[in-house]
Image 1 (spheres, one colour):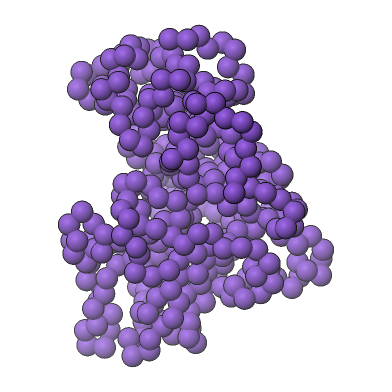
Image 2 (cartoon, rainbow, N blue to C red):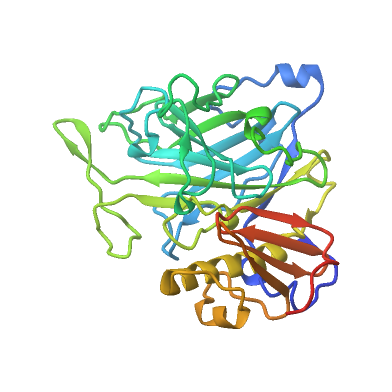
Length: 375
């Protein structure tokens, strides 16, 4: 149940596409409790058992139920955002052992974090069952001509969270990996993501504390395999692709993206931070959600209009035929569009929040919408 104030017609317009939400509780503060936490991939310790799981992962774009269950827990302190993930799996395998390899070429677990909700300078972390990792920063989504910043593409000066990022993996039973003669049950990972690195290049982001929200999503990339000569061999056969059995991977996520594309940060889930115990706090609505959606509806409609006409327009009526799910234009929002030398700035206000987005998907929200006029 999400606690919320009384809503107007406009503020409820996007309720049907409200993303998954999770309350991340603060990690234990006392030194004795902190010292008992050993990051080893095991999720049976009280650090994790004291907090709830997320909902089970779903397919990234369809209603097809994933073959294996995946769940996550989160906690935080002044230095780290902690993630614990459990992935059911009967055949745990991995091949990549070099740090900053393209980890999703193996089965993997991925974390995406946007600390300020601008859709820019967000962070990604990937890990496989061998514990091999890759961390990167995206200055903006690939669809907006974004580029990866990492040690993979720039070994000397590229972005990396390690150090101080810490991670570990455990495989069950008995850490049996790459052994087709042993039937696995699951594998787990623990990740301590450094908050300073997650907030890097996001000057307006807020550190975790009561009342702060971050945009987060998780992905599990799953490849089909065969056994040949006593060894695992990747044999892509997608369970939930548009053409079932296609030579591609399955993608299972916490909060459904609606298409096979993780790099759409506006669709990620919501993490609410709390310093209270799990029995003392209720889930609170992310109040910026409706205005963000209304702004993104203009963004997508303007992109569609530009694709057809070769230019942008400030005529909202001309955009209505380009409005499509999941972000439909909300007629009850207050909207303006300004054409700029580079593209556009589209503004949408609902209730007390105003969202502004430009042609590169850069989005900011203000709680003052007094300057918006009805269009």
